[in-house]
Length: 276
Image (tube, rainbow, N blue to C red; front, side, top):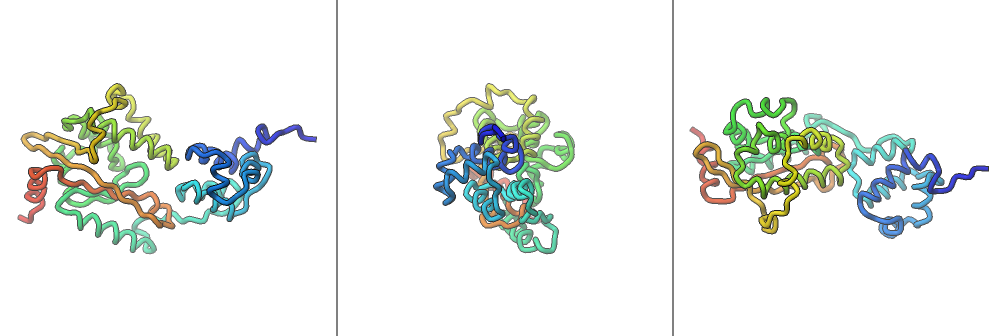
């Protein structure tokens, strides 16, 4: 006769029960909250988390949808429970991703003459438009090599000592907001890749600055202000996502568009991108 209880049952410490429990806590929900939101009894939620009950494939999809779990992690839930993954992970250049790729390219092109990029969940730059490449070139042709090489990563560009950070004149205001946003995304999206980037950059940061509460954080948008030589640039970002994605790559894409925050910056980019 086993003396295991739902709280001490060994199988609850790994596999599907661990996934379910961790994501419920990540969303700050009690078992009752999850039960009410998903239409599943609290008793069954408890049994699933303790390993006393095995989930069906439909139950996994139902609970992961309720918890807004990213598609990559829904596949991990299915695999942990002994089911095949449901959601494909296709590269953007896959023929079946043609419509997604065309839509992203259209959004980036339509935003010119201002910078725009497509990011994955680790903030690697997947696609960029010409104004963004010009913005990078203002910092030096070797900017991506200076911050470590490898994939172009927006967090490394912003927070590496050899990146854009020395040129940002309102760093004490914008730095904390971007760092916290990345930390929240790493937690909310289960982003181990982003957490690895944060861990790598953390030794270079002044945490008295990053965790300060700036009054400027109360404004509707936070422009970042740069001085590169004689040029003064002020821009703010707007982020868009694919709301009905059924592919892991599309689910993780973020479209970040930069807008001029003053007339001088707008004129600068319009001149810089005007055909010769």
